[in-house]
Image 1: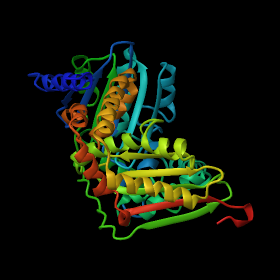
Image 2 (image 1 turned 30 degrees about the horizontal axis):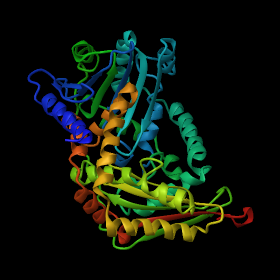
Image 3 (image 1 turned 180 degrees about the vertical axis):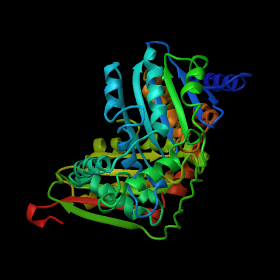
Image 4 (image 1 turned 90 degrees about the horizontal axis):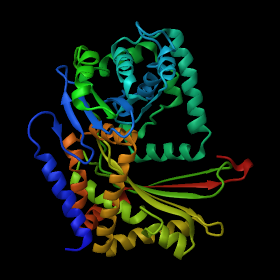
Length: 452
């Protein structure tokens, strides 16, 4: 047995033994995560790390922009902003002030499938932030003035992050072209004309419908154990009644039967950029293909010696950047993307042709056994190094748990990567990278008087 296989065997044995630990809370992975569920249905995950007296405290709600109703895009993100307004117990603006006064940092973010709130604090301040977070789960107070003031903040955020960012604006257009009916085609921040019409009642209805303990996951990582956390979780979150949360039913995409192209030019664009995107299975819709696609993306673009960078940038000199990525942590379909930025003296059509030759070569010849084994070790090593950041681990658990995976499946993720074969990678590539199911985006520079 060579060294590479010994490492895989040791990791596999570790996960098998961990999964068989008896009794008590479920505890089963590289990060020693433990989980239990409160009587009201709220799942709690604890990831102990006692190297420093700090914790990351996160509450993840299983609701994001893809759960919004038609004509109300941006609602989940709008509510996220307003959650920092006052409650019946904590006056407006005091939440952030109290956290900062106790030496902590805090923020929140919204995505397609979830909305999360977090604080990084000293471990002896954990009960304080739990009390604050539990309070705003049910006691949010909103005035019309709060809503109107925050609407202007969000519109300015949209102008800054999207309308004045040509790359983000193009990404929004490509996404809208990729999805005919699924709400993944809507921007998380919302369309401007719909943000302008959202009402206080829309926001409160969304809050009362989705913000409940049985629709949330509490993740705490750092200097804490499950035994220490359980009484605090029961004290602050366990007393909140569960509620009837609607099932997450979303329109599903019809089969894509023709390749789509989005072409734009902008004087703010310093150089051409080409991307090719494909819808792909996610871990929630097809975990076997998801593991294989994860390995494929790493082979193509995981390092400076990976295929695309080595061939297109180093060997051919046709591009200054090229890569691929896979997004599998989605409740519905994931995405597999390619991109290339041509070198200064290279036409964007030649760059696109070179990228397509790489894809054609991949589909015709496949990847090799040596490539698959090398990147599997790299992925597992990266996972071990991820232990250095309790915030990153808490983020990973929260995003996976709110998009369909269980703690046991997360624990088994390294073993899933280890089990991927070269045949699975090649089969997944040929299943997903179908030209008729692609969306190509081309963004070109233009002279100021040619703006489109």
